Amino acid sequence: MSFLETFQLALKNIWGSKMRTFLTMLGIVIGVTAVIVIVGLGNGMQGYIEDSFADLGTDSLTVMIMGRGSSRSVSEDQMYDMVSEHADLFKQLSPTVSVSFPLKIGSDTVSSSTVSGVSEDYFSMKGYEIAQGRGLQYTDMADRKKVCVIGQYLNMAYFGGSAVGQTIKLGQNMLTIVGVMAQKAEDLEEGGTDDCLYLPYSTAARMSYTGTISSYTVAVRDKEQIAQAKTLVENELYSIFEDENAYTVVSMSEMLDTMNSMVNMIIYVLAAIAAISLVVGGIGIMNIMLVSVTERTREIGIRKALGAKEGAIMRQFVIEAATTSALGGVLGILLGDALSAVATVIISNIIEASLTVSPTLGAVALAFGVSTGIGVLFGYLPAKKAACLNPIDALRYE
Image (cartoon, rainbow, N blue to C red):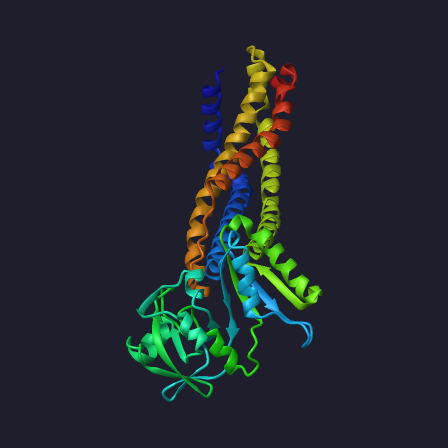
């Protein structure tokens, strides 16, 4: 009997017991579905994390200066000198100052906006575009001008799209709006990425009363050199402070890698737990195949009496088990894709973010291969039992 004939006979036997076959493959269906959805969720989470870190800049370093008392500190001039001396490694530098003063527009107090003091290079470092007016300039830093650039949300919500030239109150200081940033997010919302204000870092430092800069953003020319750049900055700062606790250098790229590693570990654990259903499904297939061997004992005896070899009998039952398991795998893949699409809609509505649950082609192929392999593995024992039946005893079986 050829392979095609054996496969057709397997399909005939499966179709003859549709309900029993469906219940048998149910464990495979559930296991494959769970693995597909979990892997797709992991891919979606990685994509979401990478998109989130893209705004922060994976080609940049964040340097925090805690200092070592009043005797030792680092100035922005020293930081700029370090960048210029290693121009082959570093691209740009921007001191950054967080501002926590209340923001007032007319009679409204705005508490959700992100307010930061930055340099004129900050916008090009982050890839931000100016939609109206101009960006911050070097003269704004040198003269500590009271000017600012705002996000599109503030422009539309409080100025009707005509913010350039208007004033805004930050603490006790009146700032003139000289530019409006291009919209970054799909929707303009309070507290979102477009709800922001940037002013010269020198102005922000003077407003904070300390006049010192304690944070810097450094852009690296090549992402592949991010580790080398981090080491260089740490060495330079150590030569100044001689104390590793006086500063912190954070790489956005390393943080992204760490987050992805954590997500992958969680997904692997969840997928392994879900894969237990595949083992349960395999046990179910082995059980039903043993029952099938018992039910078809006389048929096996007749075939062996007519000259069928043990290999042909074994091949028939192995193919039948593998076909049952493979069909469960196909149903699981289809159900997993459907649930992934539903999960994408539900998650997007709950967290209001573009997180797409998307299983990879490799995960789909692996799920199908594993489901088929389980059928072969757990179908071997019943097939071996059928092949080893004595034809005389089989023919006498009632």
